[in-house]
Image 1 (cartoon, rainbow, N blue to C red):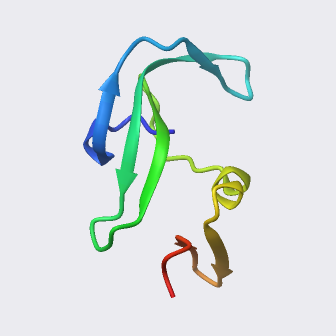
Image 2 (image 1 turned 135 degrees about the horizontal axis):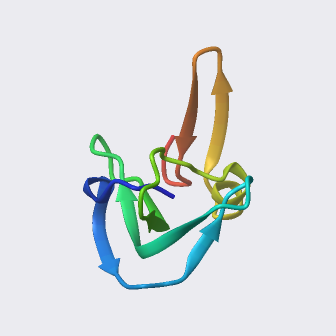
Image 3 (image 1 turned 30 degrees about the vertical axis):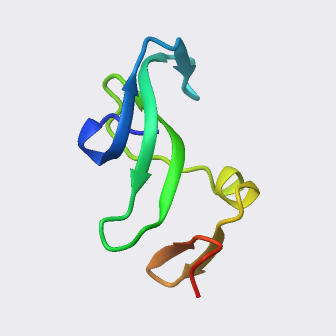
Length: 85
């Protein structure tokens, strides 16, 4: 989930309802699309564009379910697709 449309390699704009945050406020879903890493061919599909969302949020469990390998190191989190070595 992100509020920054420039993060998408492809984006389909469409009113798709709302997401509910932990404090019960809601954010309007403006569309969804694919986000890719500029330095590789890694593609994360079905990322939501949410109006006014100020952060980039990835669900570790959703990435894991889609076959991504997730590694936590001291200062960062590495996300590799199944094709990466």
